[in-house]
Image (tube, rainbow, N blue to C red; front, top):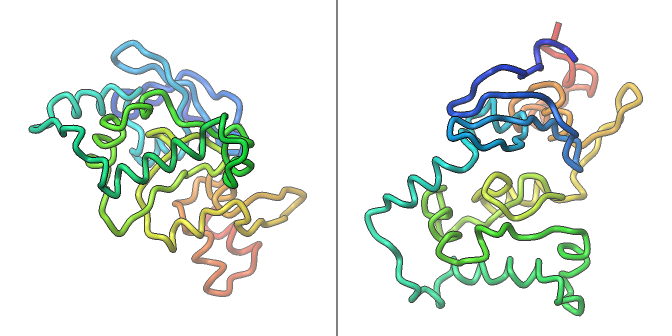
Length: 210
């Protein structure tokens, strides 16, 4: 592996990288890390470098435990509750007759145990930028609904992360834009921006690398 992209032994907030493990289904690099609290967890490389993931989840639990108010479950009519309920329905393996089944449960996409309780999902949403004009988006479209794989984005941003996102075939390899960015250590969106400005694929992928 190129030493430039080898994260073994490096520390990111509370996480120390132990070794690289198998890539995600979409080709994202993943690393086994040891948290200061003693737990081990697997994290995407770009999440470590960007600061998106800073612990095994213990930081988020500490923050939620110290929230100034504990929301009562009188939130059934709220937009957040409808979003959560929609996720539960889409990932319910017993909903085989549901039109969304083939795109979610049918593909092995689930909701994490932590979010089986609405309050846990509510706390995560409020602490991670939820606004009424945003929608929940899975960063890895083949991954589960869980804190490390979800974010709040505009509808336009979500459309850019669809499974039918553009793929680039170069030097015998074929990947989506986000997969190329991960492999080359680019900031998210940089490759799309270069191509939008009319750059050739070769220049867009290699500019600044040599």
